[in-house]
Image 1 (tube, rainbow, N blue to C red):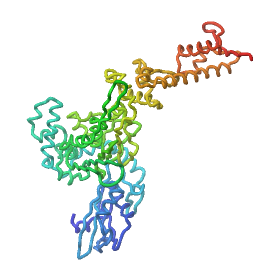
Image 2 (cartoon, helix red, strand yellow):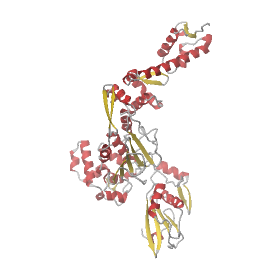
Image 3 (tube, rainbow, N blue to C red):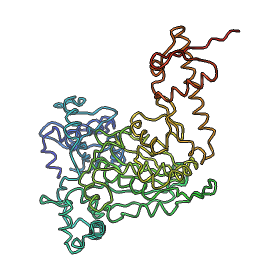
Length: 536
């Protein structure tokens, strides 16, 4: 846009003019840019009067506009560019602010600013509500990128996709299709033009930097946690199908094997599992918010790998339901990747990440640093309990093939003596039938003794069973003591121990009677149990 066009523009939702002859406060600039982003994007013009006919007065504000641009992007998390003009020796600085992401208001210092006439006000609640709920299902990756052409897509990337797709589908017809037909068949190109999904997956470097400059993926290797330059850094500023294997190749350069002996069995566990790393990267490519500034970062350390992607969890997804709630942010990208078997159309790959972390006796995937502006995933590489390796070996591959993710989570929790989540309880009956888990009390379960034996922890099993049995006996004695001369029938004692069935309670009663602590009077339905009071 020329300076003349800017001067003749109507001040409102998409333009803001300030004279700012000498300086301008960064915080105020951030508020106005925030409001522009929330109103669909626009230009923040410094050095021009706000009254028409406008005059160029010149501005010395923000003498280092590149630094200001970077600060605005970090604060607002949207793309900001700038343009410098000179008119009769007077400097005009224009910041071009992109529109807010679909479904997410932009904030500056905790407030989503909005234009109300000439004033800045917090965004009205009804507008905020519409943004969250009416736009949450919009698929940005299916939108057409204006001015993008098929020539902006890399032939090698298309060829790589074609080969993977044909191999997956065992369809040789795909090998003789033209590039354009391949792109149309997978939905990357439609009648209206080239989609953003096509740029993300097949775009040339120049095209991405022009149309989607923050879409690149960056790999870093850091040998220590200290800040500073990475020991290795590689930027991948082009479509995903030009480097589908590159991230794994870089990670695998420093992928140590961990060796463990458990009895006569030797386990070799890689620090980083190929399938888990690939799923984490694919998940970031599929679900990041491409309207937010910032790249996908994959950072490898000696003991862990982190994947950071712009945009929080999709609407309705949280750490608590991430294994069960499916809400793909970029459906078109996910659909194209699913065609060649890289992702499941309805899945996120999370289940596999959790299952393989447990199978390799590592800590579960960690999302603790995630917020509404970015997903931060940590994959831990160190084996934390070699006994888990032996336990799963004892269960056997044939049974493990039948395990769901919930089954693995139960085994992991019981092995580490952690509280079971309520949502997992319905799966326990099946594991009990398989002989993997034992029910020892009300909502209390342990791994079967055979699995404690194999990891050398038979005493832990005995302690857990014993402590629970003694506690239950004390509850029975306490109830009978309160019942006094009335006694208590078996039906009443079942209320005391609702987690036990009739047979389990009868076993406890027989043991107490053999210890001469209680006695039975009567028969059949009329039978009652009484506390035995011993004389001194």
